[in-house]
Amino acid sequence: MPIPKVRCPHCRNLSEYSVANLWRPFCSERCKMIDLGAWASDAYSIAGRAAEGNDGPEALRVTEVDDRLFSHYTQH
Ligand SMILES: [Zn+2]
Image (tube, protein in one colour):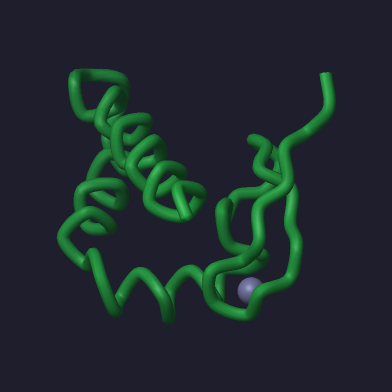
């Protein structure tokens, strides 16, 4: 199965949208921090909180946020 590619919303470089890319859909942590801070600091704080937790309902919300990001940046 081919790995989908997304264009980094910040610097426009192509990067892989896979679990290996921790900063998807961005190419790097730097781009993610800069761009996310601009539009969804609340969504990011949810993800950050969930990442620290164990596996409760919060863990599911990471996926939710991830899906939202993917939709946000691919439906153009
Ligand atoms: Zn980038």
